Length: 312
Image (tube, rainbow, N blue to C red; front, side):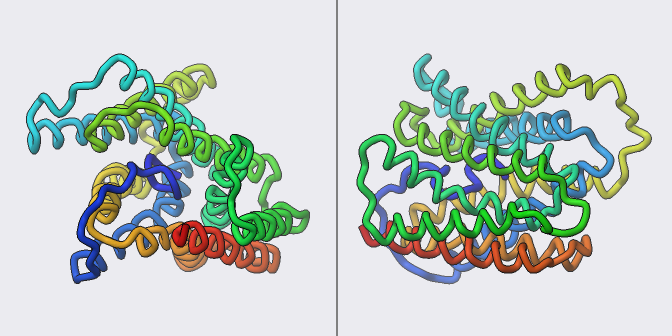
């Protein structure tokens, strides 16, 4: 998972003409393919690089690049934020980047990328749970989708998933999805910088710095061996910075203003399908019966939730 790369984590949409032209489909394809491929890239990175150090470096680099782009396009004034806004960005960044993404990176040291993506697809379900816990009353169809999704998670986390999957990795991703949902939910309630790109950059920097701190506490720096880092891991890390955290996110923010929200939201159930396909094709990850059945149930459940919510 990654900053603003999961359902509900992006900035609130603004009123704008809604059209579906070539630009919309191009941006949507970027979000579909690039965000779906980030799970594969993470898996390649952690094969030879330490998880939290690599994730921290990724988001600090992406955050600094994004700040530079904002200052270049809109002037240094666009980087301003009040103390409250900066504090909110730090909180959201720690929940999304450190908690949500960081735990996924750690989990993928032992978990197939496709399975991780399917577990993360449950984020819209957790968002509904949080809304319900705070007094909201989602429609029955939405609640039915949540129950169906939990059934899919039960299948995905059942014994016999196959391969060398560790239960600890599954638990880490489930916790990550809850933290990402909490961060997304908090982002809708807290006061963040007016410029959404500025806010996301600060979130990346906060989460990335948190990742470095966790890496130091875990002692990842004691066993650093840069000579052991493969070329594939370096290329995957660069891909995550440039394509995952900058290009695809920019396309997503633009889509929120240029396309129907119901169309943009489809990435929530397309990304895991892309991730599973890429994991099987490129990394030869096993497609076991629990993964296919449980993953299919989760994707259908998310589709039900997203389609119902967009009608409200």
